[in-house]
Image 1 (cartoon, helix red, strand yellow):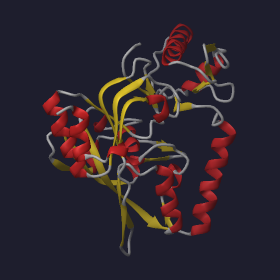
Image 2 (cartoon, helix red, strand yellow):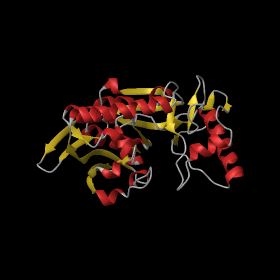
Image 3 (spheres, one colour):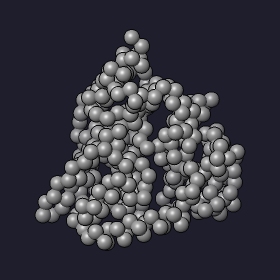
Image 4 (cartoon, one colour):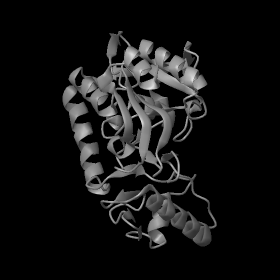
Length: 304
């Protein structure tokens, strides 16, 4: 039996895509083809997929909403999986509110649930593109809040199908990083602790953050969010701006004129264009500031 038939026995056919362009699944709108792109809707499907992967020696690559991701022009071999699980449950006590949410739910959707249910503490996430799983992996944050401030515990699955639970200290949250960036596991769900709030105040804060993003960030072009990590005491975007790199381009990849911390796709940028531009920025900052800057976006796949 071939791999495709085996997959169709355990996963709905409509959720299996062969030779799928990853440009369809990244906010950058860039990327070569995945051998198989598979949406996973249950823990059982995940366990079955692991068995097929092991049997055929197929590598597994996990992606979320592809919002901080650059896929190289040669694409990704094996199975690329997206967790399409987005259920949640709310537990209220006299002191706090807890939401347990599956990793495939988008941050925007979760923030809207919190707004509707008058729960405060998630406003900072409302404008960040991406999923809960991606936010945990990267310790996503904005406007003074980070995932580390709200997480209680997380459930994940190892590649041999075992489900385990991690407490807050075990996440080892750092700036735009967590233990998950070093582990070969699949995040299933997380429990976050918040507070009861006022709907009008929550709504006002979310609208304020959304307006600020629209004003400062190049949302009108495909991009993968902030390209480089901040260094301690240094705002990387300011260094790029001061180096005169705003508007500098390689092919259709350009340093945004609106915000120097973003690389945008003007239309037909390739991953090679973006990576060549990244190297030019790194070299320029090294020469001018004697400083090495690190990528915040994740790069996957093979050269063409």
